[in-house]
Image 1: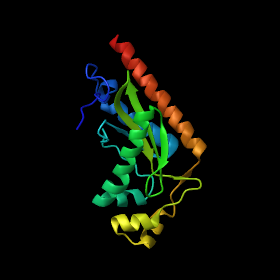
Image 2: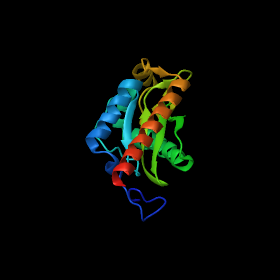
Image 3: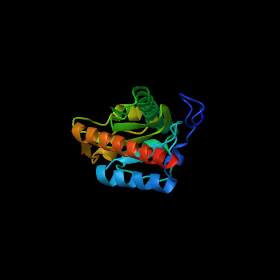
Length: 184
């Protein structure tokens, strides 16, 4: 398990909660959820949500996450893979999880130190569809039930999620700039 802020330079250790108090991160999550309709969470370097705020945006995701296999093999794997890409590229990444839902991760990087990420998920891309078969095989739930739980999942355009990614990136950049100004 790596410590906060240590992927690049050990002499510069900052925790994500140093940038903003937890209450302000929760406000950040809530505001982005209200604007986008996505489930938004801030994660530490280990991919663990830093708050308990949760706003389900569909009926399928809570069922997937309630299953140990669903959490481990769908949600966690998607987040860690996409967060790793975001960390490596130092840029937002938009992909689909194995269930077929859109997943956005924006890295939080300060002075080449990865502090965590902002993730957003839970809707379908306009041309996307839920992978009922894969969900059935992973969490052993009937495909008909998966279809019933996912029949009203909202959609988002690629342009809208790209715009959201850029908005989050700019907000994170502003948070870091303010933090650095206060510390200098």
